Image (cartoon, rainbow, N blue to C red; front, top):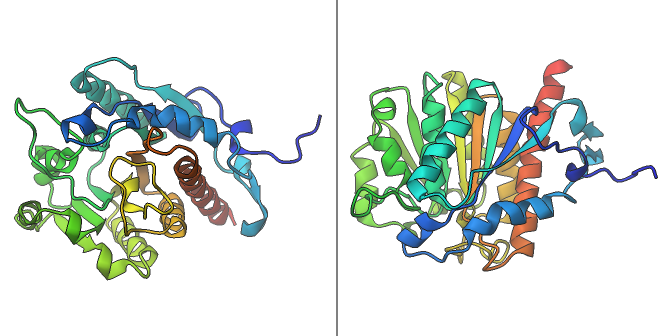
Length: 312
């Protein structure tokens, strides 16, 4: 039978041969360590189930943009389960580093936001200079737990303390859509102490139009020839649209704004890595899962459109 409605599930291959490689990080131990609601370890597999019918592959709204002509998408599977969190972080960094070395673009689905430091670390292994953009209601610069244990609130303190990051004056870390009601002044002051490397863009200053300032950040990174890592904690999206997270947001980005941001990220060929964190299908699976697959879809659309435009 001829398929007259091709969706992403029809074109994603289970290998590493694509241009964009999905990787799952099925761990929420970091969330537990940070006293959050567990369940995000089920996020990658729930995401895949809903991704199958996400689409369409040929989008008439973008002048009949056919994703297949410009982007190949593969599913590279999950990081091995039942490891310690420290072992899982090591495996994740190694896996992402290998993909970047092979000129692939990893798109990592969590799992807790603690995944973002090993992801960033993998990019630092290969990039001369980087922009790291944390789209998040929270700052995630909490100190490590006793015994130097990482957790879902610590990834960007780990990044800022990494010599490869803070010793390169061209590197930048941007907190995007953070909310003052969610961020300890101690953590804000920590970032202020790193002001040569960091920038805080508060949600209240961009809530009517977050896409324009996000696009400006991307453009600045491109002008400086920096590689870009976009880390998207979906608890930055208002819980009316995105309830299935460990820490739902009463206010936040709209679903459309989230998709538009992902589209802009996909359009930049300097974006070498993206992750999405904190999808918790135990809290709520379908509505949230449909949204984050749509965010992924818009990233793919943006990349396909950018490549098509470059060929015209």
